[in-house]
Structure formats: structure tokens, C-alpha cells
Length: 268
Length: 314
Image (cartoon, rainbow over all chains, first blue to last red):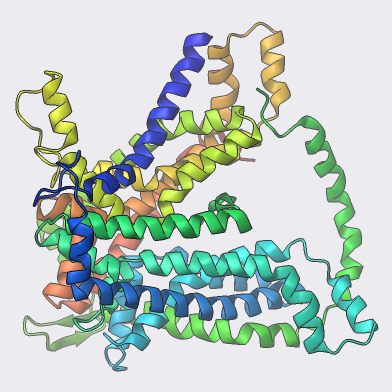
């Protein structure tokens, strides 16, 4: 019995290390003093962090990533929260089909979605524009926001809204003072998750970027395809730092596991 | 030691379900659905305009055949689809994609199952920590995770150096820009989904079954293979489907870990669209990839649902 349980735990520990190791090695590698990326790092220096500041394209890409992720999060939260309220609160005919439709962008491979939007945007003159990029990112964020807010609304007591209305509050006051505070945390975690989804995205972005408009993951992707350079390690470490920061906030608000928990999509 | 979901809590759930029909009259008061539809209008218009229509648009494009210069040859032709079978390059790429996806599924299953089992047997606190550890990497960009693997898989990288220092190999293995690299990258990226799928079905197993088995004298080994494993098959199946579908359509990991040496379908499609500008053929290949994934998943699911363990799917 001991050996069976012991083997199980040993493989489990190995598997968790396997999941984490690619992230663990990036950070020490970024402090290398050599001119080529390696792990373990050779020597110690902060030169590759200083070099980020000398390369305006990384800074610009980072600002683009942050700006568009914030905008995509904002729009997907507005659309998603309104939509989720509509589904959760009212007896709309065929609401399960509507939910399925609104979360369906998850079931289509991002590669195919990127291709479809590129071809659709080209005759509309939206290909390679920031508007097109933003629209594409809202499409990939909406399903996650929908799911998180719908989960948040599942325990919502509509009697509270009715009570407020009976006590004389107008519909706007009811929404601002009752509904919003109660679904706020679900909407915020939906927004944070949307931000990360957009900030991290590579596949859809590849079809939406232009030489003038690039994002940080795209910059890392092309650096990795051209010539490997330790600057990729320092830039990646910055990405890890930002992600960890947002993950900690997300964990405090909602619990990261909930985002992926339950019946997950088949992103095929 | 016990899975957290106790028998008592299951009973409560069973009791609450018959009450649900009584709730109906309450929701009937909210049968006005016009305001609900108004709330849904923006998101529905957005998804229709920027998801449904573009997807149908490339389906339409895939039936337009073009000549080598990009001029339209014929509308409503299936030439783009038949081209797949006339050129062995595309067929072998499709087969390579299926093969690599299957390997990734196997690696994820063998590494993921013990984690899921450990989570099911741990306290809620430990389980929370494990969940955080396995889910967090999903929220870091895939290019960053791929860069980590690049460092480990290089010819003079950590793995090759360790294996050589241990005397297991004499010359560095070709891990990067090879099928092994792609399988490592994909199984690493999608392992958390496998674990979460299996864990969900392990929670649903009635712990008293295991207890009954123990009382009747079955060894832990026997109890695992006769009770836990068969009852967790729905989770295994959904985890395998998830990892398979995600691997079939992954572009970034094969492009970075395999490069031109591992031309899986997504890499071929990307090349057709972005480099060769064969848009209509690329659209057809996209739908072929989608169809292959959907059909494989359907066959796989059906085989399990009709097979020896069909009872556990009810």
C-alpha cells in the first residue's frame, strides 16, 4: 500500500514540477552576464534589463499590450455583464442556446478565428488597424467574462432588487446601489481575466498586428523565431512578474481555479 | 484522507433537487423578457458581426478556387478540399498533427492522473494550493513558457547537460526543433486541463464505495483498478478530448519548438495564409483541420460510451 501511494505522490510532484519548470528557469536566466541565453545563467548582471530600456520597440510593444488589454477588458466586461444580467435575470426563450453562442468563440481554434477575422477585416479596411486588433481581442475575452459573471450571478437574490424598488429607489439607483456591488467582484475578476487573456495572446494577435502596431508577446515570438538573445529572458521575466501580480489579485477576489473549473470549454 | 465531498452533502443535493419545480412560479413573475433582450443586444450583435459572420465568410471563401496568380477560377468548387488528397504533403501533415496530439494526450494523462488523484485525496487547503500552482502557468503567455523550454532543450541546455553528466547519453539529443520538443511543449501547456477534468470526476465518486471495498478486504491496488479508475473514466475522456483538440489546433508551440522541422497543420495553414497568401486554400485547410478534430473526438467518445464502461457515463 505504501509503495502505491508513494509512487502516486512522486509522479504528482514530478508533474507539478513539469508544469512549473519552464517558468522557473526563465527568471534566473535573465540575470546572465553572457551574450547568449542559458540556464543556469553564467555570472550575474542586470544588463539585459537595462537593454530593454535601450530598445524602444519593447517599451512600445509593452504599452500597446497594456493599453489594448485594458480596452479589451473594459469592453468585454461591459458587453459581458449586460449580457449575463439579461440571461440570468429574465426568462428569455432559448437562453441556453444564447449562452452557448456567446461562449462559442472558445470552441473555435484561435488560429482559425485569427484567419477568419483577417479575411473579414481586409475588405473592410480594418486589417492591421488598432480597431481591428481591439475587436478581435474583445471576441476572445467575451466568453470568459460571460462565464465568470454568469457564475457570479447564479447565487444572486433578485428579491434585494425588488426590495429596493419597493422602498422607492429608481431603476438606476437599484442598479448602482444593489446590483453592481453584488456582482462587482465577478465583473472585476472577469475584467482581470480578460486583461490577462488579451495581454498574453499570440495566435489571434499574429493576424491582427502590423509593423506599426505590435504587442509584447508578438515581439517575444518574433525574437524567438529570428535570433535568440538573452533580452527575451529579461522581457519574459517582466511578463511573468506582471502575470503573477494579476494572478495574486485574481486569487484574492475570486480564486483562480474557478476560472477554469467545472465544465471547461473544448477549445478545438 | 477522505475525498472532501461527503456522503451527507450528496444527500442534501438529492433532497434539494425535487424542490426545484416549486421554484418555477417565482421565476414566472419575471417572464417579461424584452428588457433582457435589450441587455443582450450589444453582445449578440458583436458576436454575430465579428465571430459568426467571419466564420461563415471563410467557409464561403473555402469554396472559391483560384489560379496560381490569385485570380478567381470558379466559385462554388470543391477544388480546395480535393487538393488535400492529391498532395501527400498535406495528408502527411494532417497525420503528423494527429500523431503529435495523441502523444501529448498520453504524456498529459500519465502525468496528470496522479496529480488529480493526489488532489482528490488531499485536504481542501492543499488542494487549493495545488490548483493555484497548476492553473497559474495558464495565465502566463505561451511564448514565455516556450522560451523556458527552449532554455532547457537546447543542444547544450540543461536537460542534455544533465543526461550527459549522468553518462546516460554520449552526444546531445535533438530535443529542440523536433517532434519531441513539440510534444513536450504541448503536453506541458495543456496538462492543467487534463488534471482539472480528471479531478472533477474523482470528486463525484462516492467515498463509501472505496470504504466498502476496503472492508471486504480488497487491497488499495485492487480498489484503485476496480473502483476509482473505472469511475473516473468520464473525466479521463473529457480531459483527453480537451488536450487533443487544443493540441490539434495549437500554432505557437509547434512553430517555436518544432519550427520548419515539424510542419503540423496549423503551421502549414499559417504559411498558406500569411506567407503564400493562398487565402481560399488556407480557409479550406482550416475547416479540414476543424473537421478532423471534431470527427476524431466523436469517434473516440462514441467508442467509450458504447464500450465496456458505458455505465459510468450515465
